[in-house]
Length: 482
Image (cartoon, helix red, strand yellow):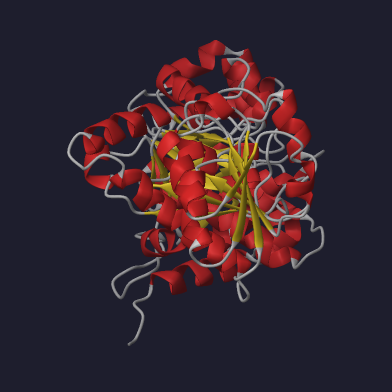
């Protein structure tokens, strides 16, 4: 698992580390790592290549200047554009000049246009808001690859939000640990490939504020049958979804639970005939009351928001087994507060809203998606999976997990129904609800990527790739043979 720390925690950790290391050593170590990545981006030919540094005030500008000095020693032609000349880092500036680097404060357009690589050291983690006009105008002239120092300037460091002009980086070098900007929203896309440089900060950081699961983590966690398992011990998933108007939602949710290695799936609802035709292994019935014993329920996709749907949701909540509530179930919970009384607060529950559903339930999401999800999770005592390009999973105990998608192929009608079936299957296996939501989100996104192969896909194509996605995740968890 990869840890992510907020900027407040990073600054506190850096201050503790700075207090016990020689002055300037931390910056030089960071800058050397930055220069190393820059050299890789310039390769195979390095000598004579042109690098332009966009240098703001403070430590990020200092990192860029010191990196420029290291690059000069490798024969790179370095030009530093000082955007705040009176506040440029003095030691870094002196180091660059000593190695023969060029420094300019105006008429910088040509230096930017002629660059083979631009290093963005305009602002750092303490900055907020978009680029100022002068910097934004200069950034518009860039056509070369951009290497950002800690974050693309103009992107909010703790939310990844972009509210005006900002840098779009080819790659980002970050020091000591990953920050929220590297995994959240628009910021994650603007960072490009993120390179982590170890500067000895980890022992000072404590527990991460956000967790990011990796393929091997999900592969290890994903339940597979063992020699003593049978259809009951692996977990029985109940699906209450679909209607005469939307039978496809039931088909997708049920199919996902079936393909996600559930020991058994029971479907209860009006789409039973369609389910039997496609998934003969599923036990079907017309109502939740007749469904039989399950270890978890999925409820909501395509079932409507009328009186009968409300009654079905109340029955599911009264069953006292873990529940994944999606789509129409979320709308019903937002409209009818009395439905919450049907649920035992000690029974695990996962809500899977997109932004509009979240707004109906808990108010507007805003720029800080992690904070919004955590507030809702604590308020309702449930796990909240907030859908988006970076999916946020928040637990009522304060744990936060982010799944930064590598593509947007899963943004298609019915895709969420597949996700709910995956979550339900993992809940039925007994997995921690927070991890179940996080693991399902990764498998779902990977299935979409495998199905797409560079072209748009329907949710049915994503569904069919679920087994292959699980195989990829499981393979990532296998030990490497020397």
